[in-house]
Length: 319
Image 1 (cartoon, rainbow, N blue to C red):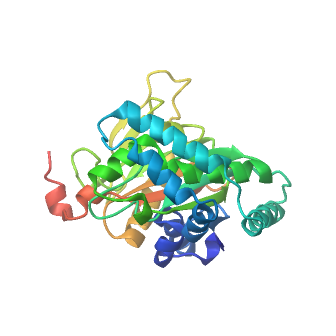
Image 2: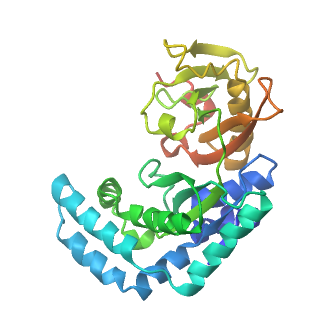
Image 3: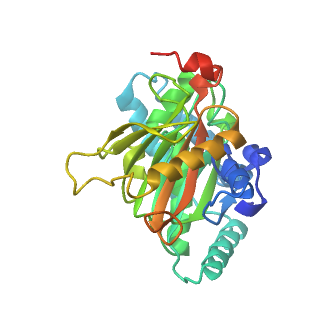
């Protein structure tokens, strides 16, 4: 039902979802990744079966067959999520989760260790589709009770309206993408951001595109803040373009913070592990390893499906 991150590789994608399995591979390669554990997709399927939720979920979704009717889809989504979030976990799984959270707290010397509870659905990254941003994750979760609740919310996010619509257009059924969940030690980030190993608009693969802001990276991923941006040459690390937020109080100043160099190094090493264009999310926290006095950690990596088939020379010519 549970697997520790240190045990995982990409081969475990079906068991824990590719997002968490990929972090296991990157951790094994020597990249700093937060410690944690995963709740398997089999545990999610067992939870649904024991609460007889499969049939009830199908009945609710049948009330919104038209994915273009967003109002009906949202109503059905809310009903399904309520069913899941109010259902009880079996005692064995709940006990295993409590024990794993206690072990994580013990490892890091904090009886109330803040964690990130991250969704990781099987099949969410394929050659033709990406569910990046579709499902939900929760940051700053403290205590076993809160972790249990956050796991149920992450499970239920398999049925958010946007994911239901996207899966329907991809001709996927929710049974094909059971939800795994990762529980990872929270990085207390000073600044954080996303690095793309290929330009997300032009497709150019001769550079990394890095966007960063103060605090956790979720605000950058969700587009809720205006982020600093820099494009870094893949071969020699030169800054090809550089743009800071006009308001200095809100700018993370990613060059002086050392984040540009860190993201580029993470992107290079991650691409080598992943094979193909990749996006990584990483965070800089107080410490001693970067030129600005911060330690860095990678918290997420995912492939860029639309660019996988393009060789570097061809992708670089896309305008």
